[in-house]
Each structure stands twice: as C-alpha cells, then as structure tokens.
Image 1 (cartoon, rainbow, N blue to C red):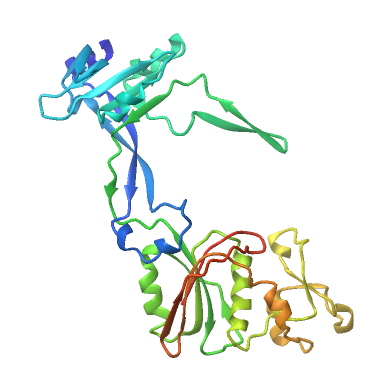
Image 2 (image 1 turned 90 degrees about the vertical axis):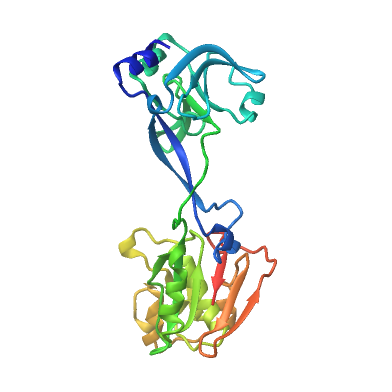
Length: 333
C-alpha cells in the first residue's frame, strides 16, 4: 500500500513483467500442424512490462468483489477491470478465486528480506516451479530457490494473435540434374513451407523431396531419406545402401564424423571409416535391399507425391516404429 501510493503521488512507475503468450494467426488452417506431435504447440511466450499506475489510480485493503475479498485491490477510473493483489505467506491463492476470472497478482513472501521486492516497485512473474538445476560433476540436482520471492499472475494471459514461425522444417531432396547426388541442405520455418514447394517442386529442381518436422539428428534424417528414396526406385549410390557397410557407432568429434565402417577396407586398401557419399566413386558398391530396410523405421503420418508427374497421395498410417536414435514424425511430398 505504502509503495504503490508513493508511486501514484510522485508519478513514478510501479511495473509488472508478465510472461505473455504469443500464438500463430494461421494455427487453425495450418498444413503443418497435423504432422506435429501432440505436445508441440504453435505458440511462444515473451516478457512484456506494464506500468500498473498507468491503468490503476486507486488502491485499497480488504475490498470485496462479488463473493471474494482481495488482500489489496487495484481499481481504475479509466474503466480497466480491477486487479487483486494477494500476499502469500503460508497459503496460496484459493482455486475458486483464480477460477473466478478476476485478474490476480500473488506475491509470495517467506522472510522479511522479500519485502525488498515490493519496495523496488518492479514485480516480475515467476516462470516454472521456481527451481533451478545445479550441475555437479556428471550429475545434477534441483534446488528450490527459497531465497527468491515468487510472483504468480492469473487471468492476464490473453493470447496475442500474431503470425509466428514456431517450427523448423528440414529438407532432404534428390536433384533432377544428377540423381546420384542428393542433399540435406535447406532449413526453413513453417511459415515458409509454401515458398519451398514453389521453389523446388514447381521449379522442377528436385526429383524427390522429404520435409521433416521433428528435431531428430541431422544424420538420422539423411539416412532415412536415402533409404526411402532407394525404396521408391531412385538409383542412388550411398554406403548406407551397400551390403558391405556397417554403422560406425564410435564417432568422436565433428571433424571425425564418419558414420560408415567399410568391411572391404583391407581389400580396397582404404581407411576403415568413411563418409557415406564415397559410394558414388566406389567400385565395390553393391546395393542391398536388406541394408536399406534397416533405416526405414519411423512413426507418424506422411504425405507423398511423384514430383515429375505431380500426382499426390495422402496416407496417415498408424505405425509405432522408431528411428534409430530418435522418435520423429515425417512429411513427404
């Protein structure tokens, strides 16, 4: 009461920083969303700071609004809805009061020093459960931030409808100019999906293309793309398709990131580990359907088309398989 009244009298700001929700304007009509995992949201949060004194020019103790009594009530002569300020010492704000729809700022106090937060006239909404993780050697532990007072806000977060690029799309493609070469070289946001289709499909630059919507490893997306393209009949050469390859699990650094172990390296007098694209120039390359099938495990729905004939097929299978290292949902066209 004292701090806020002083701010009103001296025309000083008393601010609160809220974690505001931002959502995509096209979420309801999005062609990407059906292929996302159920826990992936098309929204984000960003901090926004408001000066309460610009909205609320009156403050009072123990005021009743309907069937609820506010510890402190902020009211406005400008027509803004009132805001409850609740002081939490031992008991949090009751659920019925939260569900009433009234705007509520709950300030948690556990020791006298916590009053410095109010005296600073700058409240910041707490995020999460007010814990942080401390790393100790190879392990970690969660520590409660008891030294910091909590600020919880209710019924403020009205979603702001803005066009936002929340998800990343990863591309695998086979070039029309040279089908023995392929790429995993373009990353776009979900809002640029249609531009990507225009650029490659209608531009006829690629024979085949896969768009990935999950955060699986880059190598996993590449291996799946190679195996799937081979299954579709594209005559590509890659070590992951060769009967003489083995997957190298002992890669140590990005500089030595060679995923193939060649079983014929002694006969060929080459190094045992190599990049998978060396099959393009390898005289011992022998494609093996059984080898490619090892990399075709996935889960989720997909959409696929023949880019040369522009014939589209949509299938949503109910598969419960997994990628070698990660789970993911895939999208093809």
